Length: 296
Picture (cartoon, rainbow, N blue to C red):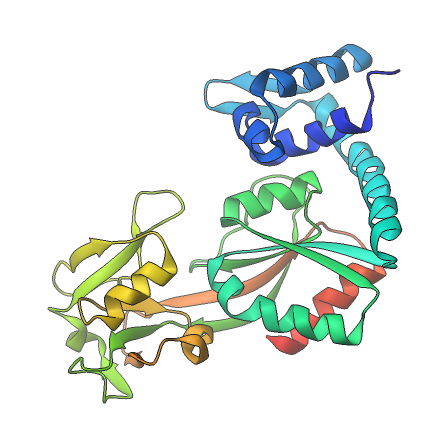
């Protein structure tokens, strides 16, 4: 059973998370051939295929799905033991989120946790909602903060369903430059957004743009497309365009940007949710989840 090494089991988790040998190799800093060899070694040890190979990636077989939780337990125990040795921490929670939470919710929450629970080690990484969902399923994250757009659907089709708890549900606001004609207004009607120039961000699927109010009477003038949030806000601050943002970002905006609420239909609503595997969480995960409920 020498093939069932901790490194091979970790490769299993990361491939399951990313759904691709290539993406897993990039995440781990390995070559693709090294990832393939580790998976092949596990498949020889089990005598079964662990992944179905498809043109667009890989998916766990029934055997792979049965092995995954056991691999997760082994890798978690080893990583927790190493973390305890390095830091003296009594527990560890692996947390994931998306760019807006990195700029707003997460830093303050982690600072509070460090003050209240100095022995709790929390790591954090940023990703898209599909990637965060896969990481929760694979067990490489314990908790993830995701944003959901109405109509709210399950995050994935796998069973059992993930545990999803709502943290907040809020309408987006429009960010404008301080010299923009709308900058002195606290709220506007949806109709007043017609004719504005917008800066958008590619969506996770790449088939639509975020940052543009939906359902305007005329086609929106999306003159700029910027992937990075900081770059996007610079376009707004320079007075070149407007965009939608989450209200939680308002206290962290540059001085040259103002926000305006929007009245009327259609609304642009986002639900902030905390996601984990079903079942009773560990005390450490429960502590972080409770901190989110208080902070949000």
